[in-house]
Amino acid sequence: MKSLTNAFRKISYLLLLFLYVQTAAQHVVDDRKFPDSLQQVLKTSETLKEKLDAIFLLSDFYSTRDTSKALDYARQGITLSRQDEYLTAIAHFYLAGVYFEFDIDRSQQEYLYTEKLLGKFSQKEALIFRSRPGVIMAP
Image 1 (spheres, rainbow, N blue to C red):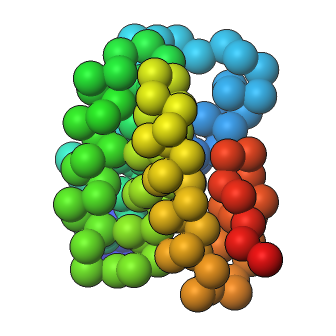
Image 2 (image 1 turned 180 degrees about the horizontal axis):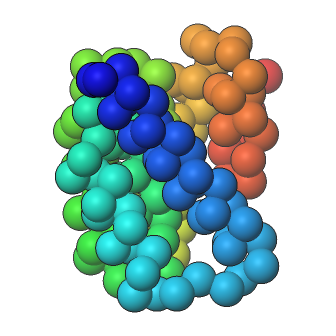
């Protein structure tokens, strides 16, 4: 029964992420429902990765709406990710995105640090993050 519940949660979580990608691509996001949905994911997540994914999306969502909230979520991500070097790199990527809105120098420092951390990883997701705008790939 527990594995069925876990499977349902994972499917629900993936569905929320899929819906986010779809709505972000169409630029039609209900500003009230989206963060509430992510908050629910954050409360019910059982793994660190799931929690951090929700935190990162919340940070990204608020980065152009409420810088204070965006920074709070980005800093939560950094604190929670300290156990995992890869997740720490992703957390710094999102922190750089928040700073990009109001402190370009700090943003650049964070992106460079992200690149330094991600350079150790060869998995596809790491390469995708390294290729995203803002991250400067080292020679």
